[in-house]
Amino acid sequence: MNVDDRDAERFLLQLTLLPVSAVGEIMGSHAEAPHRRDAQRRLAAEVTTLVHGAGATEAADAASRLLFGGDPADATAASFAMLEVELPTGPIEPSALEAGLAAVDLAVATGLVTSRSDAGRALAAGELHVNGRRLEPGAEVSPTDLLHDRYLLVRRGRSATSLLLVG
Image (cartoon, rainbow, N blue to C red):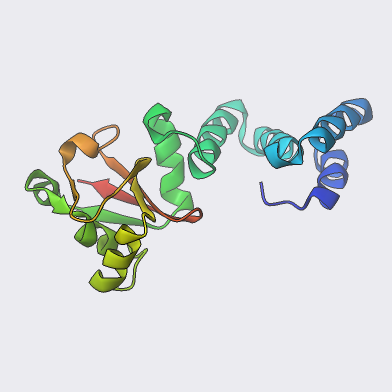
């Protein structure tokens, strides 16, 4: 997904089994709306399928959507399992959630903040999200926030993401 636009066509031609005409169509679509990153998405899909098979490509695509703006509630357990190897992860005890875990403590547990005061600033700025829901100052996270009874996808800003695993 992070391949530069200038390299996408060359990589599609060199690293995939797509016909040259198909690459031309992909690049034409990409030129019309580069923000959608169609060329990079197709490159990722083709290479993943060649290396790992179609099943892995589907899981990787779903995981990519999670990281680049998709709704975590729509993701499968397989997508989260794939994120376990791609993201910084950490454990969280079920008992901590049952009592209602303060958003400040959750943020510290992820490593996305450097301290409780940094967490407070991030909350006040609206930078922290759990499973796509923005956390407000004073918010708590409970077992109802878990996805697939195990996952909390925590994001700070646009690109800093961590996955907490319950159990």
